[in-house]
Length: 366
Image 1 (cartoon, rainbow, N blue to C red):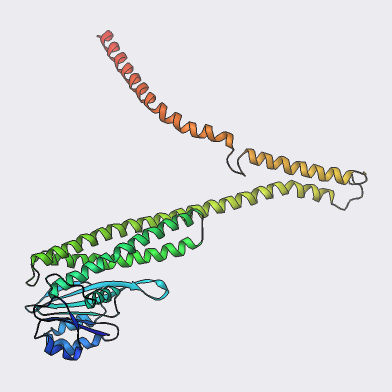
Image 2 (image 1 turned 60 degrees about the vertical axis):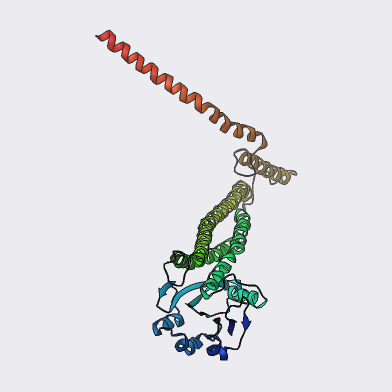
């Protein structure tokens, strides 16, 4: 898709024009030419019209993942990155090449970026750009792209809160979702770090076409991206914590399963031993001829099982903590906190007494 907006000389509103008329339109006012989707190779067709350097055109058409900023006597060339949702709702970044001249702004991306499309639609609907110029339009695009990150980061934080609940429950979905979110966070940070450097350089107003007003806008963009980077760094740390919580919950769950199975095995072991002894093929097995022998044997096995279960429960091998032990366990920590200052004072008094006793012994020796 090729989009062309034209601002006539002295006009505050833009008009949608046919790209075939670009050579005529650029003589009256200034234009925004947006190349996207599969029309990126069309940039070479406009290179002579705008006087673009061949090396910059080659950089714009490449798949390099590095942000850069270069200035020529006629225009400013930079490479930025936008983001959008791809297949499977996975986040992916898209390279955005930008040429800014005195009377034109050329943007070129491999995809139809939502941020560019949104700004284009706003302008077409009549939203004016204060003190409109190509470099100010670029600043507006940068601000729009940065503001789109705020709801994204908020949604990321909400997802992490949800993942914490799943991690505590040892839900197997935690690992897949956490690694997917961590990939997105790393992807965004990898794009934002060099891009923020570009905006910081633009905010210094050292370039010929960047005035103080636009430099202030780029400074706002740089600050907002710095906040976004801080939030992404915190999110990355939280995701690591979520994975650790999940691993700990899974380990506790596994230990609990192993412990219960071990207890059941320990309970069944003597029962199997008794049944094995009385089930041997001997003629005179004690109690085998008694009327109540079988019931007595089964009762004895049940008594063993209940006794062992009570023993393991008292030892804390199975079951939850006993309620009567909770106040004692909670009070133990409070007692330790309360006694700590007393121990410090007692230790100081003891050290003082030792020092005084040592001085008295030295005096007596003299």
